[in-house]
Length: 166
Image (cartoon, rainbow, N blue to C red):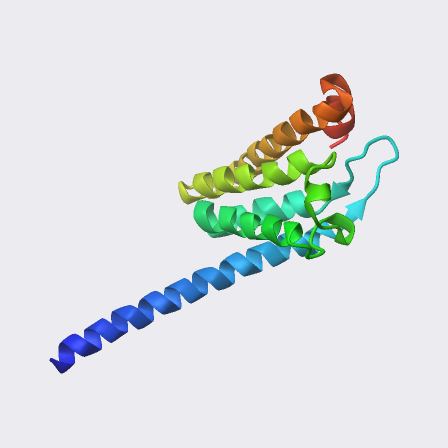
């Protein structure tokens, strides 16, 4: 009986440790993106600044995989919606998410899932594969961003202001 109890406790403790480790990694991923969001270069000809967010999204997704990476980005977005100053320039709230750059933020979640999924399948074995993976992830982000931005300024102008400069 003691062996069974010890085995059960070990399994439960192991599960808790794994769950705690996963939670810590997800939180760390969200914090990395939030910190890199503060790296911002405003461009005078577009409402979309150059930020470190995209790099953060791609790194977090490649390092954590699809589930933890996407969960990190979900936590990042939820924190921003809840009022934490995690978006670029310390911004937060629903108004920021529904503003001109909102599509890029939603694209982060999709890109994290895709990049993480492909990283789990070995797309980060070489520098060339990693560069291709990050390019694909960026295309996902820019697609979401440009399509949403086009509702404000039209598709042609969204491509000119929200994709080509980057």
